[in-house]
Length: 215
Image (cartoon, rainbow, N blue to C red):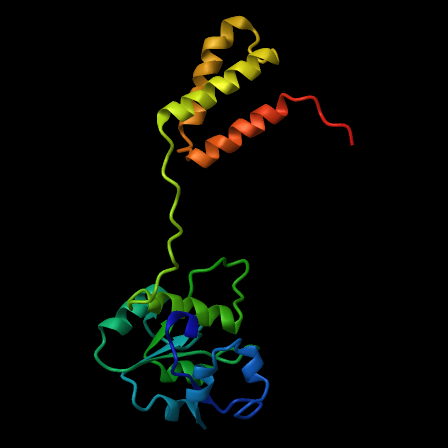
């Protein structure tokens, strides 16, 4: 939850009671979520102030409700002026039919029909991630890339390849030399080499042409 900016956790009749001493270590530092968690006896009590309730589950037999993807549900949540709730069931059993009946809509992940099992953490992170697209969260810091090297440096590397490959007898048969050189040049000019990339490649080509050191 906290990875994607969600902090309001409501617990309904937790099996092991609350507070739970095992929750802190399992939360990996997301203590603010635990500190703000509120406890309720029933799901109905937990969602009394919500205008739209989304049950995260596969479609239940006998329950006819709109079925949304996590993305579509998140878009609705951000467009809704009222409070919304994502409801998740226990790890082992999921939501009961009565819980789903209380919800307004069902959220189901498009998933491989041959293996449709998601654990609770996976379900929560999918929903939280889609919800986070509608809020301004910090993006991972951009790592600046080295600028591309001038073409003269790349040309020198190509010629280094050509000299060493020619010495090694790579260009055979001779009538294919021109086509092979064209392919080599096309491959090397695709990469967007930086100055450091080219320096390293010069070193690699040089090392490959040396007599191996005795060990």
